[in-house]
Length: 252
Image (tube, rainbow, N blue to C red):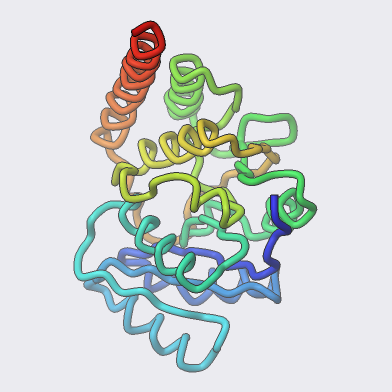
């Protein structure tokens, strides 16, 4: 594979994150001084987008991508991927705006990509060294069970398939059809990793600690869990049918 382009872009999707967008951007650039931040705002009614524009006007390391309305986390990331690949980004990082993905882990997530050892790095709560300090047992079971279910059904050996703290080599993003990825939270994360694995990407997990958001309210809902469950089944069936068609074609 060609060498890794050293330019690092960190995508921060926002919807009503006015209280968080400034502090998280400052923290990210403090942790990775050579990075660029792309804030993707889905028409936040609380003025997050306008605040992001003011930040970008003062700091050339900050850019803003505006979308007219809230269309789902996956669509926000797909729009950001298209934007950054058109600008020859080298490494692309996904992370939340609410500090649930601590910026202190950014260097360890970037290291396997910068060192040429991986094409996709998953920030994992479930490998050795990973932690979720303030979740109750029910939330742990739902999250861990979702990752186990997806891994078993889709034959993926990774422990954390539903997490949203991950980093991509740009070439790995180019090898998957981002436009076909689903819009939801967990579903998007699972399918993106699945498509990367099918394309031959080297996937590495590194431990992180997942924190509760500092300010604002969570966007998680049961519909997101249901979408992820149905997507996993659909992906498995599609894989089976695709293999069957190939077998029949070879026998013809």
